[in-house]
Image (cartoon, rainbow, N blue to C red; front, top):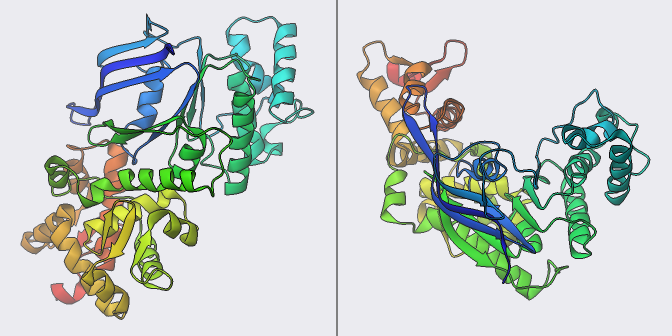
Length: 432
């Protein structure tokens, strides 16, 4: 029986809102990372994936629950756990060699041993001869290799990878992912377990023994998919494609038939509007309506045809479902009658339909419009709306949600927005 490396029991985490109230980010999370496995963690933005990784690494504490590493309670940074970040997180004034040696220096390792271990891991990761280079001299892929080398040089028992490949182009990301899997499969690294946070479903299926899908508001483990296929895996094989389809279906379940609680969640002011713009929404609609899909498509096939990442597509799918323009079910997407009408409409017709659906299905947009119609001054300042949203989410998330609502509302001619004054008003023709 495989031993637990990381064990979380009923973990919860809250952050304080601007008004001082606690906002639950994670709740009742139960998770184990076992020896000899790679686990991928998927979930929409705001599901608490990165927060969960930082709790496992001991970088931030949980508010409730039990956290342990090899049966020892986690109270602070864990010596056997290393983390790779999406942003590379390199010190620009240090050489590659110095960046890689940082963790060893913090552990008090002697200079000669630091140099030897750094040289070994740089050669292993494909950066031999680049020790004296500065980060600005490197490509994005090479910078991330430095980040991985800095983690591996400490001989971690557990490697946590937070969107480690997402900032790279597709080919570079795939190459680096394959190199990491080769090091793992051939036991060239001492690491006993890897946890990968990703937005890329294909990447998760190609790498992981298990995929954990997190739900949102607050973050919680929704379901698990076990992938019992040997590595390396052929992305075109029937077995791999079947798993990709299954995970797509599970990831989009909320947009089609989620629980009553989740259905209700999309009908309150604090609903986190998906981060997508109108151009993405219309591009997916037009692609879906065109040959060869003719109104219905398998999500992985649509993603491949659109040449857009899962990270960008999933918010677009959510928006399409939210606005009643498409139905998403069991890994497939199909245009509704309204979606077909939208694609066939002229520009003015599209904007009118968009505005109608926005007021019908997005409470924040309806709230803005209603208040503009009753406000004596005929205007609202964005700070009033941000204060309202602060009751439901963190400040940066509130700003993002309001930006989406503003863009959608302007396109649907539901209201106007002045970027200089930060004020929303009724469309000019209606206010005259």
